[in-house]
Image 1 (cartoon, helix red, strand yellow):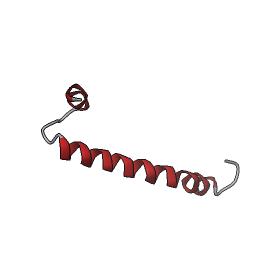
Image 2 (cartoon, helix red, strand yellow):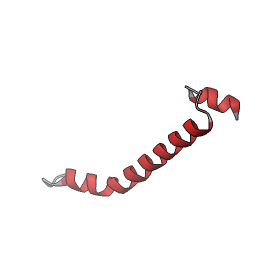
Image 3 (cartoon, one colour):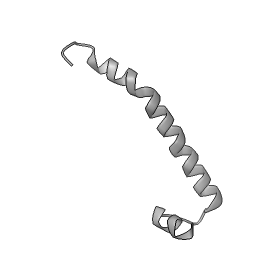
Image 4 (cartoon, helix red, strand yellow):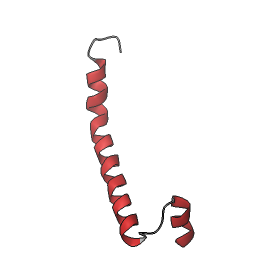
Length: 49
């Protein structure tokens, strides 16, 4: 963090994990909406499983 470009290195090292987590969250949201369209809370989903 002493160099002037430390923010660039932070974004560079965390961009791939961020994109992977974002893709998994979108996929999970799509699947939950597809199979349980009337569920509005995660607790409702877990009680139905």
